[in-house]
Length: 562
Image 1 (spheres, rainbow, N blue to C red):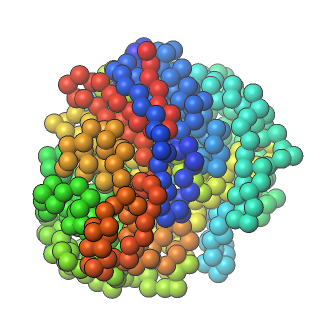
Image 2 (spheres, rainbow, N blue to C red):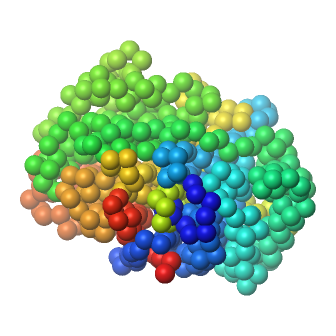
Image 3 (cartoon, helix red, strand yellow):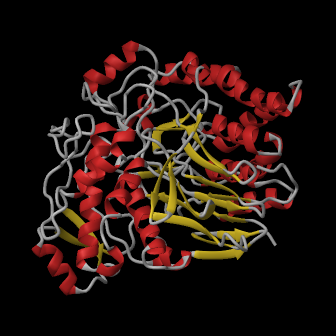
């Protein structure tokens, strides 16, 4: 990524205006999306203050990574129910200079104390309180982004966030399930401003290179007095995280997964997220003439949903932290396995069971490992600069009810609820293990040039929405804005990523505008059809013309640099 005054990266960051809850079955997009277009730099965000933060950094000569970092930090305080400093961010980064895509795995870990894990296995993973908090990953993810791709200091990119905090807003709402209350009696904004200024102080006091000064920011947060304050709060509140858990945290930078579809290349997050199932689904669908079926015809909806069911079953059976489990990703994406699995799709009958495959033995099906009993919020973001760099990220906080961490102003997420307690499964909680998350940004390339950057809020439905946006663009020739606005459908035929809820077998939610004859056809095939009022998933995207570098961005609050 060029370290120049004019930004040329496409970085997509968007905060859903309604902070779509992770576990919501059919989140809907805003009825009146914001659209912006330009070639000098664009930012899309669900909060105008976060959009303004990214634009401000662009105007000050920052690049996409700088603008992305500023937008992320601003998002972490402008809608705390959806994202926070204690949250997580997978970030896909395309460097135009190096012609390569990398993935920053901004995900925190479970406590490393075996006694803590034993407690979870006996009592379950609580939904929302401090025991459900993973190691906060936002600060190190932002620092890593700046180190590898940015030009600005932490001090510079955090200034818009400090201005928001110094103004005293916004408030933080806690949804406990039985009530929704504003958190009062604490001045968390001022406290967080003090904490962030401590990080700036460490950067300014550090000697050496820009990278070494940035490292001082992470060191103070994860290994200094901020970590000491967090540990004291964990102990006070009965949590299991400790300073050694914080000190061990580092944002991995890895190669993303990729697959081709109709001549396009799709880049996705790995099996630490649900992202690979999008690739598996597209591989299955490549064997069908979707364009001939027609947009949102009964044949089209049936085929897409049945392919998603198969890919989601593999997600639930095999995906997990690759540091702990062997995920057969090569086999899952292989031609042989894909062909076997594709043959399971009955064109006239909906599947009403969970059917994972057996990639190790190359068999089309096997009984699912998890058979029962089964028992927040997310934002999205995108940015573009004139040199062609691209970032797509999906930040989240999965709101915690634990309150503010002492006088640090830091609010935690409750991401450990995305792990389970089923012994022998790939996503079972273990010391230092990262949860398999739903957060899954997407980059779509054609002829080695980025053409779409996509981020979606909406829990398990995120990649269902992304799949349809890609199909709208590739199969039906829609413009980015048309692909965004087109009505979408979804299924809950999978094991929930939050609390291991029972799968809603055969479910199919379709737009209420879908013709009645199409609905009747789908019901006749065995789908359990319900009507939704809007499109699935909180989508934000940037579409890029690879020749002119002109970008169109669509989302709740889009902006461009003049």
